[in-house]
Length: 436
Figure 1 (cartoon, helix red, strand yellow):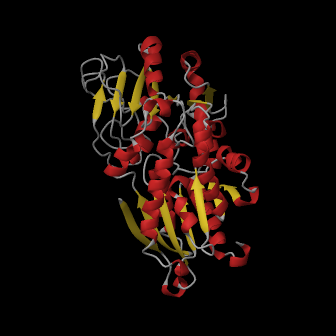
Figure 2 (tube, rainbow, N blue to C red; figure 1 turned 90 degrees about the vertical axis):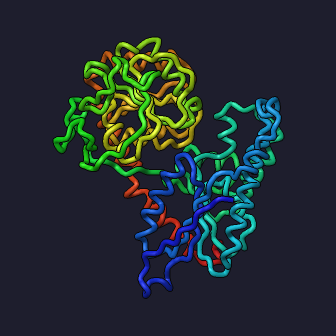
Figure 3 (spheres, rainbow, N blue to C red; figure 1 turned 135 degrees about the horizontal axis):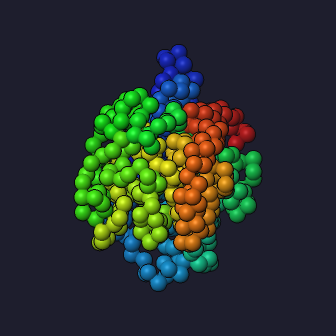
């Protein structure tokens, strides 16, 4: 069972006696990696915590193989044995790690997410436990269009028991928090919303004209002066730009003219996040009017020749935030099923207007008609309509992006949200046992 343990403590010797002896278990996959990065950064300089941070990697090979021994007709009908198996595997994974620590010496156990938190049921009651979530499985089954089978009840009841045992459930969104309260009958006093957040880059201007704010153009430097690491680039279907050259212009796009609208998509799980739908709409309606950059680890295979499309599979996060995202005129994220996606917040933080779908917590992020547009999931016509509007009203996009950035500053700044999270955890760790 793969995991990685890291000791974190910024407390001085005088402070160490008062620091909360804490275990932080965080699932290390997808957007949870971003959460871990910010959590570790802020824990490392908070003297209130004598913390051990443990990365929980996904399933080992045997568990992955066993988990896939489900019958596809049952799966398609909503009999989701896979989710139940993940809960059980994670329980054993965390239980094994907990054996290294004496519960009598623990002031706090924090676990992200509830799928990894089944082991809180094994903790002595005097050990305070906090679980943070970005969704509930009740919402996941609904949003992913699963059939609502009675056989899901065992998974949902297990999840309810986890929430009930926890001293506090921290939700990234109002959407997930409401589900904990309404669907699982958890008292609202035990649920708190602390939104996920991102580092906000300084406002970046001039990129679409080929000039970064520090005077660097397309010379291998990102706008903040950092060296941009090398990345793998696949453009069109043959590794070259549509005109047969791999030249890079000042705005970071390959072989595209400034007259084209710059569309961007970022997301792994390409199909689930609607990348295939965006690609289809682009090629059928906008291939000669807009350039599309797809950033994804799992691009579709077997594509024919694509017009004005770049597919990038490896982009370091610093480059993503300081060079790639600010080079887009419009971020398009037609996800079919999502929770609190960091990609949307990152686009807003970069000052790029967003087109996304009314799923998960995205309506809390994007104000429809203000910082972007919300559309129905899995439908081509609304997506094409909003991209067409952007082409006709291109001059309005920077102002929309600025309003989206204002919202990101107000609600999703890591510099504020992660200290708030740690303040909340410190309060739980300091509560008298009788209150728990």
